[in-house]
Amino acid sequence: MKFEFSDKATYQEYFGPAHHMVRRSVKEFVDKEIVPHIDDWEEMNEFPRDLYKKAGDVGILGIGYPEEYGGTPGDIFFQIAAWEEIMRCGSGGVAAGLGSLNIAIPPIISHGTDEQKERFVKPVILGDKIAALAITEPGGGSDVADLQTTAVRENDHYIVNGSKTFITSGCRADQITCAVRTGGSGAQGISLLVIEADSPGYSVSEKLKKTGWWASDTAQIFFDNCKVPVENLIGEENRGFYGIMGNFQSERLQLAVIANVTSQMALDESIRYAGQREAFGRPLTGFQVMRHKIVDMATLVEVSREYTYRVAAKIGAGHSQIKEISMAKNFACSTSDKVTYDAVQIFGGYGFMRGYPVERLYRDNRVLSIGGGTTEIMKEIISKHIFR
Image (cartoon, rainbow, N blue to C red):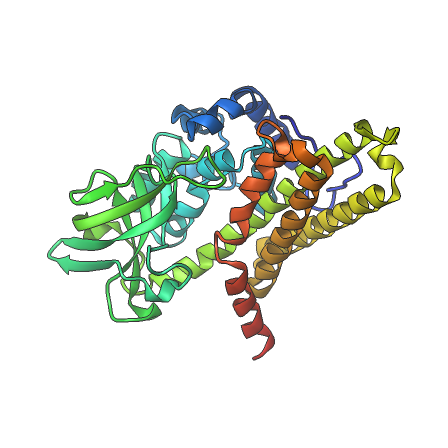
């Protein structure tokens, strides 16, 4: 599968010549190293580990990160351009797996020490190590403040007990940025630790079988008196909840971008198919109901993308956008829900068949309104800003 931006779309307000250079570079990498192998990787339920190294070698993993740790600094739209082009490979699993560093290393960059950044950020940006974020627990779901994984300090180590689940890149991660309870109940007792996969007492499940995102490895991680050095604490003890909440804003932006690209790809495929497929002696576009359906899809896609970009621009300018990014994620996901559903409907029986792009887009889309905070959690966040 190969997807392009619609010629009718304009991005000049947000993307300049330097952003387009990044976009072209990432697109060339995706076309050469990813697109030809997508179908095989989907069936394998993972992509080769060396893809991280290849992406690191050409600088893709470091886009938007500090130069001293191997990155290429730039505003938020450099990262958005890269995210969009990676997602255009047509596999949400590859995009999620290759992008797991983008939710794992920001707390270290924001709150970690120079030594932690050198140890835990630089090798990931270079593609030498894989990083994952571990927040969700089997019994906790979206209730982050009630997480149960404990970390008790004993001399120069924390002893960690508990488990995490639904961890993207969890099977192969060399390190995880993990939320643990170091204090009392509630948000005030949570800390963030970098836990390395070779730590004593650390173990990983088999790959979890998922409805979508087949090409990404997803795991449950277990801690049985797992020993973690105290120097792996990110920021202050019992202050990790605030780091998690700040990180969620970036994760929700990424998911909104992925949802918008998913919608655009489904729309593009629908336009192409409707122009070629004939029914009752004329192409599907000869029917008003079909034209109007595609118009509705296109309208939602453009509105969602533009709103996401606007919120991203405000985030990039340093404005708090907690309510707005929650709205952007919900709107982008509801748009991709409808557009991928309608795309399958337009394709009819073929839309239900493996090997057709819209079938995979439909499957991969479903998790977007769950990851990074469910639609319902987003609405609660929004409501708190409305009913003050």
